[in-house]
Image (cartoon, rainbow, N blue to C red; front, side, top):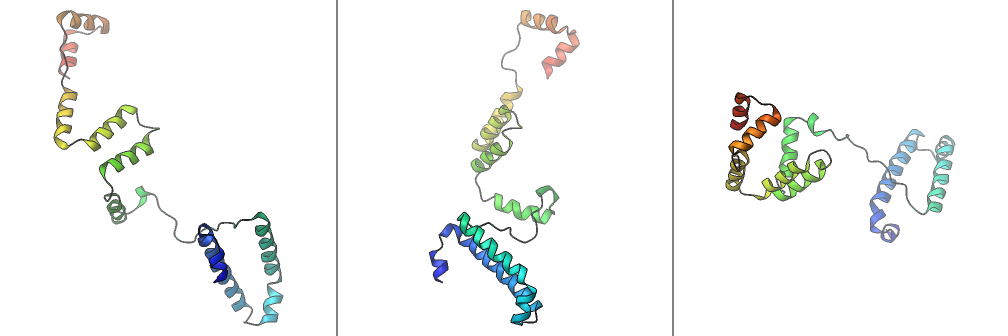
Amino acid sequence: MYLISTIPDCNKPIVETKISLFCSKLFYRWKGSGRNVKSFLKQNKDWLRKLLIEEDKTEEAGYLIPTTFRGRPAKLFRVLSTRAKQSQYKELTTHGPEELAFATHMSYSKTIKEMCLRLLKKAATLSPHSLKTMKAQQFTCEHPYSAEEALALMIDLKLTKDQYLNLKKS
């Protein structure tokens, strides 16, 4: 108890895992030697020396070496079953739309264009009604071309009359 109370809080999990790993290895080797002290010392002489050498190294370094945790490795989201995806999705739904939009922005900021990210931010903060009006404004032409501008466009792009009309419709 004294040892655990003197360890700083940040190192407690590391120390606890090292102790549990050591105890399990010790128990396995103790069982393998038939629970006999002489045969245990004889069979595990090298292992005990190795432990003492490693202990000296960690004391000299002044820190504990973190251990890896056992268990099943995590799968990628696309590989998971629909049931597992639904359980992970339930965890995500506890967050608000602003948090999700920010998380998406941070994960895709290098690969998606800035315009798409701005739209994503707007979509997360706006109401559904304002989103519909924004979508309607996006597809309507702000100002129609005058006759001279339309003629200049047709000449510059070398468009036929039918091509210009199709462009005007879309």
